[in-house]
Length: 301
Ligand SMILES: [Ca+2]
Ligand SMILES: [Ca+2]
Ligand SMILES: [Ca+2]
Ligand SMILES: [Ca+2]
Image 1 (cartoon, rainbow, N blue to C red):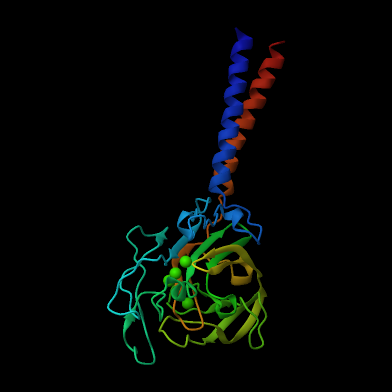
Image 2 (cartoon, helix red, strand yellow; image 1 turned 120 degrees about the vertical axis):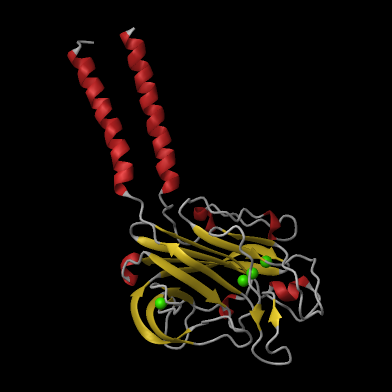
C-alpha cells in the first residue's frame, strides 16, 4: 500500500516537474541565437507561390510582433498608382483591430496624396512587393533585447532601427543596420537627428547625428525564400539591455530609403522573466521531494 502511494506520488511529482518545465519554457523568452528565424518559431513558406502559408506567429508568449505581408495578386484602386485595399496577411500582437495606416507622399505629382503601404508604379504585384517589409518582432530576457525584421526590400535600402524609450514620440536611440556615413553595423547610438525617407512622410530613416554608446549584434541573411519574385532577407538584432540603460518599455520603428513601407511597434514591454515565479514552485517541489524521501527513509522502507 505504502509503496503504491509512493510511486503515485513520485509519478505526480515528475509530471508536475515536466509540466512546470514546459510552462516556464514558454513563459521565459526564448534564448535567441542570432541568425535564424527558427528560434522565433517562425517559418517562411512560399510553397503556394507567395508567403501566405507562412507561420508568422512567434512561439514565445512574451514576444510582440506586427506582420504586414502586403502583397498578393489581387488589388483594386482608383489608378495603378493608388491601390486602395490591403491584401495579404496582417496581424498585430498588441491590437486585434489594428489596420495598417496609409502613408502620405511628400513629393512629385502625387504629393500630399495618401497611399497604402507599399504602393507601386505598375499593375504587377512584383513592383510593390520589392518595397515590402513583411514582419517585425521583439522579445527580451534578463540580459538582452531581440528584434527581427523580414523584408522583401533590397537590404541596402533599409533604414536603421529607431527606439523611443521614454514615450515622448521622439526616437532618441538607434541601432545601425547598415554601414553608412561614419557608422558601422551594430553601433548603438544616442541620436540627435535622423534623415527622412525621400518619397513619403514615414518618420526617421537613418541616424544623421549622435553618439555611439554601445554595440549590438546584427545578422542579415537571405532566407532563400522569395515572395512575388523578391527574396526575403531576415535581419536579426540582439542588444544588451545595459547598452540602453535597461529600459522597461519602448516604441520601435523602421522604414526604407523611399519610405514606401514602415513598421512600428508601440509601447512594447522589455519583460524580464521573474526569477521568483519560477523559483517558488521549483523550491516547493524539491522541498516535498526531500521531505518525502526523509520520511520514507526514517520509516525504514
Ligand atoms: Ca510580401
Ligand atoms: Ca509591408
Ligand atoms: Ca523619446
Ligand atoms: Ca508597413
